[in-house]
Length: 555
Image (cartoon, rainbow, N blue to C red; front, side):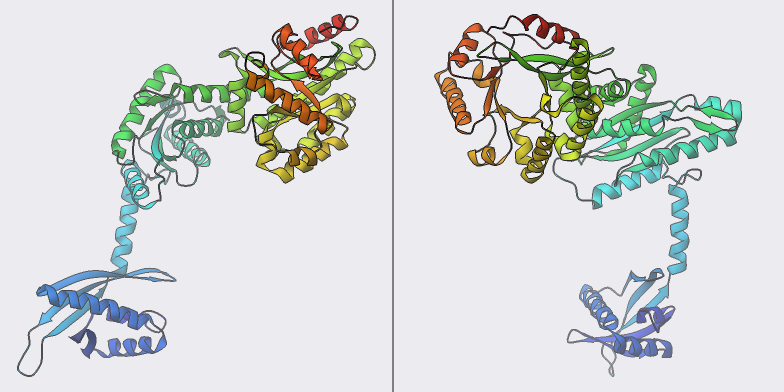
């Protein structure tokens, strides 16, 4: 043991006498095993001297204290695991022949500590699922709060889960089936955890999760969604498929100093309310209704995309010099059976936050191309109009947008020049190199590129000149009040002049009166859209609108 390990191991149930002179520790007497191990270790590496230095400091403090005895535990980490030694210091009185000396004894307690650790693990763990029990859960929380780095704005939350109708499984199939169900549920719940989260079984059919929340309630509700996803598919017991329903309650801390036990109790109280309401319940004064709304919107939006409940509305784009309809802007619309008509500003923000913007963007590209194809079939030949499709910066960053448009065009049979991709300045600023590659890939498909909300971002002449942009869309915040606000009018004229020098077309958004339309016409603006011409309309009405204006075009 002493050949490859620290020489302290040789002290097990042995003793040595040291003196402490001039801050140095000197061994005076010891048994043969101790001496042999000490000398070998001192000659092998720095393990011995490092220990001697530590021991010297301990003895120095012991001497200064005036106590007759002192004891401490020494831990040594090895490749086979930690070893523990109980070390005791005693004071030997001075004699006429010898100065005061000190007796060091060491006892190997590794086996005892291993037994204690195993017993403690059994006391703090659930024997069925191997998860922490209620007591172990509390200790795990205390450990994470004390030892993990926590941002100033971070909170912690407890998510309590109660398996509904669990007693019926025990009554109908027996306790072994009930145990099997609990084990399977525990395994599935583990898949919903993030790094640092703690799952525990705190009661018969009750589970709880400790979660670190960087974004407050929003993070907790996303964990709840993962829990529901994990338990969504049936569990097979005997010859039956058991669908697991659960009541879920959450409680959030107001600060990291909150008592975790109190938060656990609040979460359990919320579960009781959830059993009656059938919904996720949050135990907190002044519940963040907005966060719950966003969670509901996300959940329902996910279903709407999967079930084809989204629609596109089409707002006409009018050539201001001729009154001709040059195209339509496709705008996503959503009417939910539970939430009613949800504003695009609301559900698009939620889609971007949750990652649903990717399937939403794909659907919009395919649907816009298919709408053009259906219009062409209805008219008997390709319509002289195109459709603008909006691109989110997050969609551009995460998805292969060029491939999506390529497939949409191929499956619809529509020419690429009839689709225009609208993107904002922020999408370019976020990753200029990637944006440039994407825009050139779209140009290879013969698509047009429009920069939406121009004037509200940070574009400069260099970026406009280097990118394959065809159209600038002046934001409605400048257009709608330009007749009353001289500064806004100057901005509009400047953008029109800039576009002319760069050989770009300009579309003015937010035209709501005839006076605005005529003013922009006189300024030489190419195209406009707004409520003065038409509100966004469904696919059939958009075709009829174009057909009605086909032979009668006027601003």
